[in-house]
Image 1 (cartoon, helix red, strand yellow):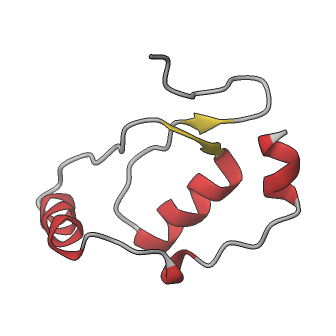
Image 2 (cartoon, helix red, strand yellow):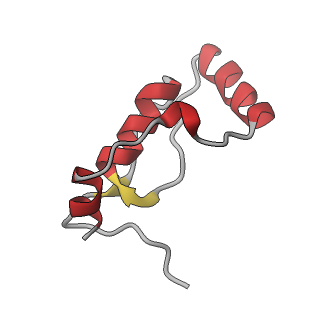
Length: 74
């Protein structure tokens, strides 16, 4: 279902509410050569990769893909 919703959705990553101070910290660490991999997201990989491309600091993205759901289990 997530994959179908993502296929029909346009996401503007620039419009998302980012924690600016934390994002600046991550950018500084990225510029030092550190691999930045966000914790896994339950969002579909299409949306997660869109945000990752926009920010340009992540080394990898772990997201749901239609076969694997990365939702947190409680």
